[in-house]
Length: 315
Image 1: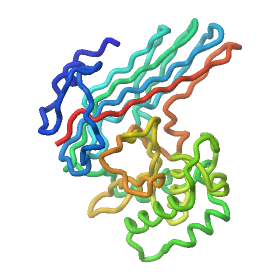
Image 2 (image 1 turned 60 degrees about the horizontal axis):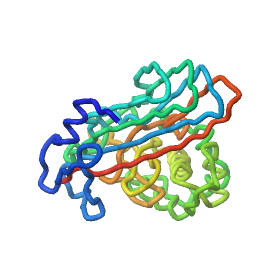
Image 3 (image 1 turned 30 degrees about the vertical axis):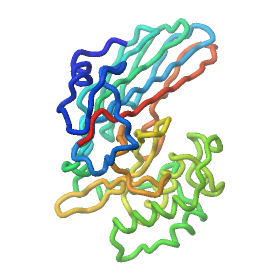
Image 4 (image 1 turned 45 degrees about the vertical axis):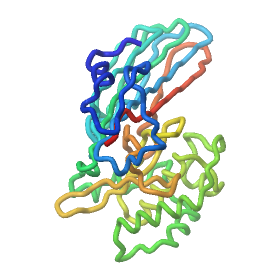
């Protein structure tokens, strides 16, 4: 993999030589630290490297491939800053366009007129978190945004969800405390189980079964927030130590002259801290699916996804 010179320099030298960050000579110019031995939430600065790939293999040549990728972290999200990134495409000649969607996410659109056998999309990115920069800030009117308060097909409430919301205080309660209770309630209401739901499973269906994965728990939390009048949004990103992408929720809380997006992870029953890297936000999973697309042809396809999130430096 040939890296962009700016990215290569960053991986070799870092933006700063932090006290606990020891840079080595790994494949990408720097060996990630042993994160279990680090207290990332206590660190003033943390630098991460993301390596992610999606490889599509086809039984026969296909044409008119159109791919949408939501995998590049935002330039800034609160205290999180994207310092460098590179997206490579192999296996096909592809035109690309990077633009922001209505939620402010970085979306890459790719077009390839012919794919003979396989195409692979590979991202390498360096992200830095500066603790003092705090949570993502939104304008005060975000507290009344329909996008943060209205249900979608995946987060629509049924009687079971309304009954669950009825267990929570709804009047004269601090919204941050309310969000904490919702997170804990969802964590205790669903068992983590891989393979029992899909990206089309609704919050109501997941709750009825009592099982699901991180995206299901995020959808259930969003459904409850909507019922309680708490503005909230879905988050897609990465969690250190987890093999695939992760999902959690940001609840928008009023501040003096603006609002802040406070992250909660109902899958783990806690606030999301410095072990998390945000990639995109939206109303639900369908807004921020990491990869989706179409092609013309009768061939079937097979997707192989890989991902690694490592810590390059912390101090």
